[in-house]
Length: 440
Image (cartoon, rainbow, N blue to C red; front, top):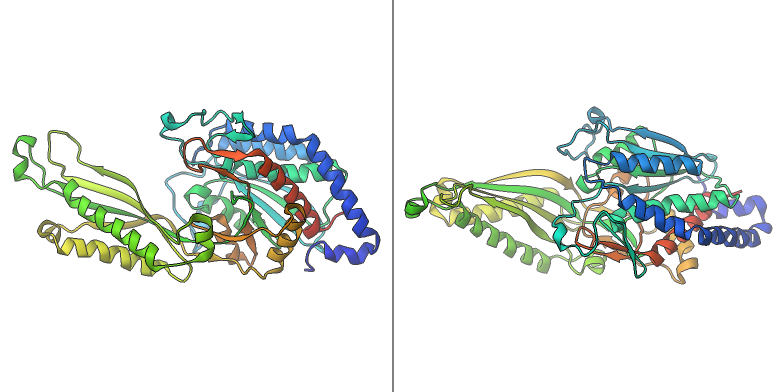
């Protein structure tokens, strides 16, 4: 297909340039009138808890908003038998029953480029809640910010997608190409039942924009991610006879220390400037959970850690498995007990290779040019140190990137989105819809 707004210039020639400025002015004026509604809608969505596996109520809310805007709406549950056959599938411990994806379609001509505006409604746990100053489900507004779990990652971006289309339509403008708005589930757990299921359902386009938080920079790559679990046994004994037992905590501590050193070693040996620009580090190995024993008066007879390792483009998952398991094996060989009762390593959950989008693709270049007119300069290209749903797009031949608002504390206490950046994001999305899809 021909690319973007410029294909429309040939149809209406000299009038298009002046008309484009006038159209944008009209849309932005409409956005100004709707700014309080944008803020209120984002706040209302934050007030609906939507932890992974519990997205139903929030999706019902989104479905109603899509319908009010005039989009053709479909709500559907992922087909497990279908998605599990795909090489990018990641298993999660939840049923897909009553956990719908919601898609709102604005139909357009196949002669013009089409666009997916994607966002996920699921959020991670707000625990420990006592570390929050604001109610994590309060959607409170203070000092130019909206606070709450998931407001930055990524309910703000999800609502910005909707309000960009809403402002366009209520200004009496209609994109020529098809625009697909998606509110998907379980991105935080791998995205198989959300964005992957939507692609397999047939929702495809000439490009996909995901409004993940990025400080208004363009994410065109992300790290590989793998989860692993380490288990080992000790020898239980009564606390009064603890010298006769073997404490699994002490044995696991040796592995913990070795993994910390591995993390430091990998960060020193590897480099990937786009990711480092975003996070200040090329890769991380995180020990997320550690549990051991079951009674204060007994020597701990078991210990378990769950970990997440990120790796840079140029590495692959097989290399990571060898490196982690080799590190743990080395610890085991230096300990008499662990030689006899070696720890086990289980790879589970998140499992994705690094993703890289060609920055020279016309979809990326069109967005950089389009957004620069509002930002005053082209946004920076960055990489994200975690997995994104953009990773699915190469399987379907679709270019993609992430571009979203500014804020802080995603996955942490007092998560917030900056309202000014949310408004700017909505303007940029609206302009890009017109530039990429054309309009009438």
